[in-house]
Image (cartoon, helix red, strand yellow):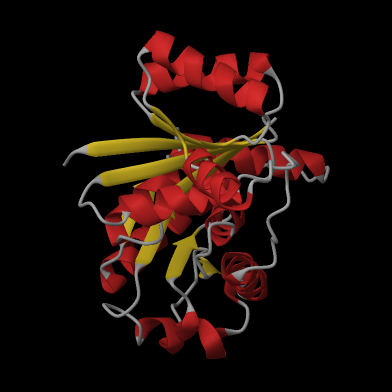
Length: 274
């Protein structure tokens, strides 16, 4: 599948540029991702963004209202062969021609309490309320269910996804866990992901945790416990027929992008704030 990466660049929070990028790429059947760069107010920041756009073959959509910085970005993009679009300029020109007035060039005037903001807040609230197996009576309202053993980054991953508007419920698995009926009833109905990690890494994480609590460590018993947890987790994932993702070497953003692409969930959006 064709891949498309868009940089949404702004001297404010960047939501306007991001929304325009989202609205545009949804019209195309491509593997799409968006990176938002907010608070871009210096030429050095523009330099970094354009260099990265060159490396990643990205399109730049920007809403920088200060004319000098906007012109600098446009000129630099042309020099470097990067496609950059000032999405505010055409409308500014039309309004100026119609009214005879000049733009104020004040950043951050867009009202932020919009549908996107409230949807994101609802997703975050839901995800917090459904962390670690809580509130199973409303688990059917989730956009995604994540299952995994302790130390597999269930909660950080769930919160990352919530920040792009995805309601996530996560459920912990230990060696004696049996999946509740509320989740079993959603098999094949809701997207589900099982997180796993290699035995050695998980054992070391458990050892570090025990050391932090000054607990005695019986290595053989700990390794056996971890192996039993992994075995139970794989049995559960098999019953639920959920996709399994190894988190051993991957970071949160990579895992989130894999999930959103697999299930065609809301766009893969990352945010770089200066």
